[in-house]
Image (tube, rainbow, N blue to C red; front, top):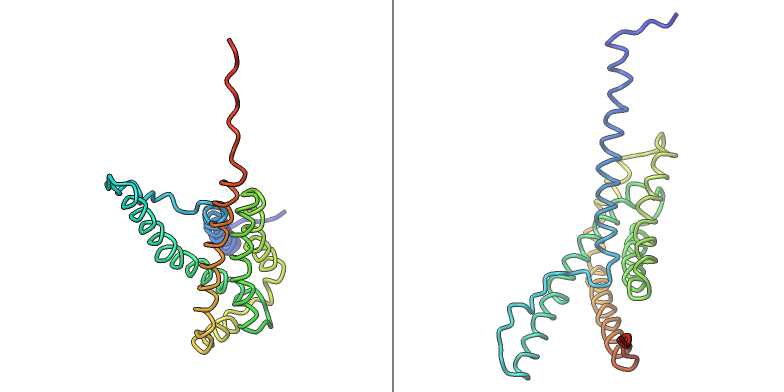
Length: 200
């Protein structure tokens, strides 16, 4: 007959509890953030609501100014944050990969998600959640080979690669602008047809 006692139960349940907490926090974070990055219109700030200009040309200039604030100042901060998160995740789970490859894959994923968002937000969401959840699966399968020390050693080499990060950020910003312009031109060339009102 199996004998149960509190000390053994605590020794068994304690790591299970922390695993569940960690996985819940990770999955909720990924769930919330991948939906954010996968939207075509990331920002819902609507800074243009503060545009009180009455004249047409001046009002358009103010609108452009607010648009630049969103996508020149705020968008790079957002991209850099998500880029940092992906880089850290890959550093911990992509065993044996050089840091340059990790940085490349992290920014390539962000670029792919942004391009996909302009084609289909459903596709963009699938791409955005693919890598984080795949990394979770890799971690669970290779948990015995997981090394914090190797990951921190890899990340400690990050300052020597700072020179390539601005190029990545500039490229992603330009890519977003190009996608916006293409979408705008496509809307002018192929306007959405409004359904004709039904006859009474």
